[in-house]
Length: 345
Image (cartoon, rainbow, N blue to C red; front, side, top):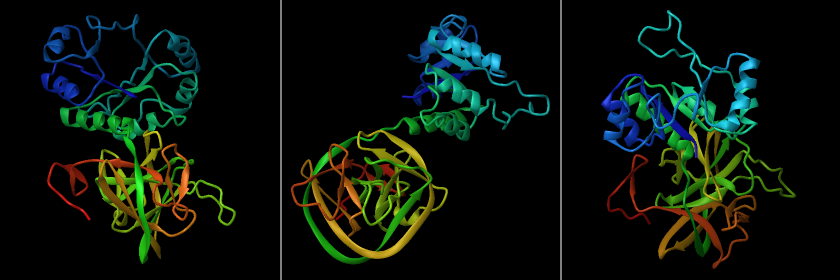
């Protein structure tokens, strides 16, 4: 799990409360704030009178040269290292956090490759995404600088999105039948996926199937590991932040949630969406006595996922087979989860 630390530059009950309520892992606090923080809730604090002491338990270091990089590399085995944010110049210091990034990617790649708990300062969701994607594994965490509670909440939410996992369960196939032609959607992402990875799709947002990417070798078609042949235009697809969209709504530049068979996730960017008319199969399954269904193109390269993560072509599926699904009880309102009574058939 990625860590989210928050800088509290001066005492603010509202900022501390926002950090506590939105999943912050630690607060970097100024002197004299320890007791006031602890009165509001339980969270690790870093400061001269905090739970962790700078220079002893946590190291705050600049990264402006190869010498800085070498020093940080030596410190990483000793404890967490937080990169110091660049101080804004006079032109930038006009009451706003400067937009220029406070660190460079290449030295971070060198340090991430070494392991250890490296945290970098972030001021925007774009910086969060970049830091978490370095060398694919990302830094251990981020140290958030925010101007107000609203901005802090948004940044913490973005870190949590990257951390989110899906709970997948085994469903039993009950029925498979052809239903004729329909407009189906291929999601071409900017990410190369492996067998066992795909997106969650279904006729109901409460019963989503793990549809795998076209990563498996086929004697007649070259693998397209960036593509998920996801289903018809009306189907739900899971996106980050626990939301869903209709497949027909996706467009270039939109985020979509890639899910692995073990439930871990990552965010991918949609590069292109292809909608074409193709013959479809209706696949019905049951999990915990709840029934769900999905429509998928009737072709060998479209695959669901067995409980062990192996790709299972829809043309080979038969009643009694097991596939991975994600279940939820809530309904959806414009893609957001809501607690309401709803039936989808």
